[in-house]
Length: 120
Length: 436
Image (cartoon, rainbow over all chains, first blue to last red; front, side):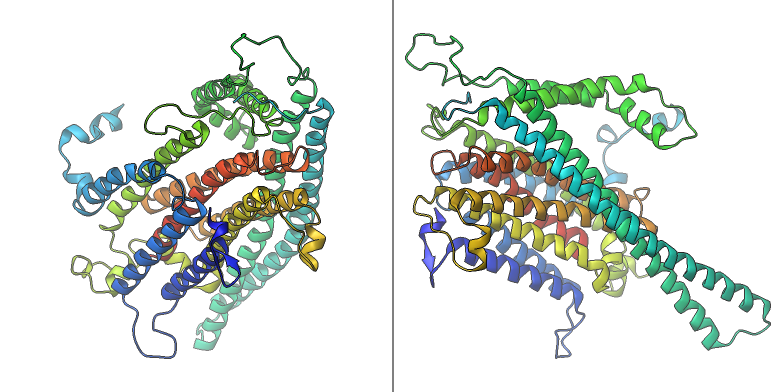
């Protein structure tokens, strides 16, 4: 377990906790400021997107690998945790990103019968 | 798991009833302070400012010409009225939330404790030995299936339950109390199942932990494998919220998209589509509850890891200085880390409802598509936090009575997995719904 790995006299949980706190502060700051503090450099929507995704991945890894012990536990637990990711990717790709007009343009067999719902 | 190990006197369960009483007392005191005394003060300030605003408005309406400075002053006064209203809501909602949570906590732990105190001691030999050399350590528990049946009954009666509750809140409508019955039977079944679960778990000292004997979890604790499969299903639940939000969000012409020059939004006026993040992220005061909640969940993840680490550490030494006063023994340290987790989780719920009340006051309610997905996703997450807090109450009780050590720390570890998952879900929800 992570308590046996020490760095500068503190265990991995402590450092993971600090990293999570720092990155949370960083993502809130990135959204809150329109420009990089002390400069004229504009923080665009795309930049915020990239920051939020990268920070989310780092924080997610920190929680899953160290707090949930997936790094030290048998690989079967990581596989169990990753199994639904396949479906998550399918949903995000299939529903979220590839079909912005999904609700109005989906085939009739997978949309509710609105006429019936209104007249019921 | 059938609990066997440490002998637990039935009288210990009465401490759960006492714990419920203490929690209820704290809740009532905090409600009286925050939700009544301080909220009333804030309400008076709000009412005074509103009177001033209406008076000023009437005076200006009678004038033929209104100067720019007078219009600005009126606008400033209007802003102050809104701020005073939000300030009043903060105190009122936090007071009411604390009261309701303490009632839920007290009834949950108190009722479970009372039921178990009145039972015969299950730790005594009850002639259940099958002569197979295992005694009854290998028995599974009936509690999960009773619990699931209770949820089935509760949900089957929930539509009527919700209508009856709504009618009771609205004094002008007479409530049909019979509509509550099926859900109440469900809640009672859930309470009996949970209290039985505790009854079996409290004496558990690590002996008789069930081990999987076949692929793919061979050699692993069955409870841990089961919890990971449960987490797997939870990932799917939150993925549906997130993907439906993303699906809708990519189509919305939000102010941000318009200002960023998105081609499809060039003819759309600003303010057409307002998301929760539009109302939250631009102002420090509005973003603060969500940001504090994020930090609270991360800190609570750390405190529960510390509770587990302390429980597993046979050579634990009391810290020096101020921390030593809070944690003089290993048992006290584990209990206090769990209490800290409980308090941070409770803070999360309180701030969440305060934030919701502000959003509703600003007109962002569940009636819009943006509001619907926001309240459903963050509400589902909040419900997970609340259920986790109810479980944590039992962990605090066990840490305070039987105690955790290196042999029976699995309870903290497995609950910790759930709690970290709730934190992980927030890592996705917070940037998606609050910052983007």
